[in-house]
Image (tube, rainbow, N blue to C red):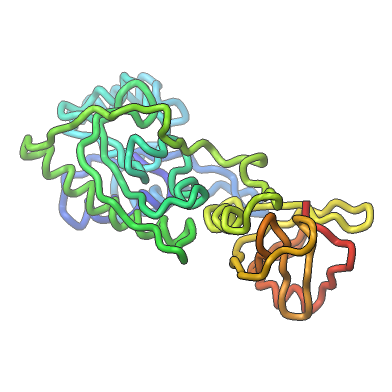
Amino acid sequence: MGTPDFAVGVLNKLVEQKYNLLGVVTAPDRPAGRGRSLQPSAVKNAALSHQLQVWQPENLKDPEFIKKLQELNPDVFVVVAFRMLPEVLWKIPNKGTFNLHASLLPKYRGAAPINWAIINGETKTGVTTFFIDHQIDTGAIIDSISCPIQNEDNASRLHDKLMVAGTKLVIRTLEAIAQDSAKPKPQEDSDQLRIAPKLNQENTRINWDAPSEQISNLIRGLDAYPGAWTTLIRNEQVIKVKIYQAQTTDISSVLSPGSLSCDKKSLLVHTKDQQLAIKIIQLPGKKKMPVESLLNGYSFEKDDKFV
């Protein structure tokens, strides 16, 4: 059970390893693109390429859907980047249902663990498999693999690293379940653990009063989607701008946070401590582009400011 690209590597490896895949459950086709035509999920495309049975239920509690899966008499369900499952569904397999999560649980439970690990400046994360229970990401841990976060990593790079590690971990977990050697351990809960909530307009906005490293981490953590954003104040205009890549500098800020310093090749933003060099940017109605390309045809004015 899965939907996005992150789950495709696992599906492909299960086919490659010749597991007896009874079918694939994924999201219904959704409108996408300028024409808003229905588009299949990445997992559906992969499943069809392997000639696998595919189910796309709108309602996971649909009695007919539940009955079909029960009739398969499956040993185990493998869940990767899917929806929250109702109990009637995750209790079907005789050896249980396990989920692959892109963090070292119990840290970063939630919808966006890859993003928040980078946003919060973590130097290590990983992938975890756990048996699904009644709450989100709280089930007993089966196994995990850790992964360092390098300074140059952004959400895109870390996604790809964890997809490889996650594929390895799913196979390892299946082998342990098949051999009855899995020893799941309850998660140790704590109020100090960081969570990974859904990304929204509020938590993806840049605060220029923050230190430059903190802002850089936010931009790195949102590079793939949805992009960190700010508003450009130009005279009385308010222009929404997205920033996809930036680099910290050792140049001290001498103007108020959000103030701009630029020439024909570079755009620097003053923060709480040091100036931040913008590398990839997107203005309304334009594609994201290197800042040098933007500056070839766009001039920032003296009083322009990010807020």
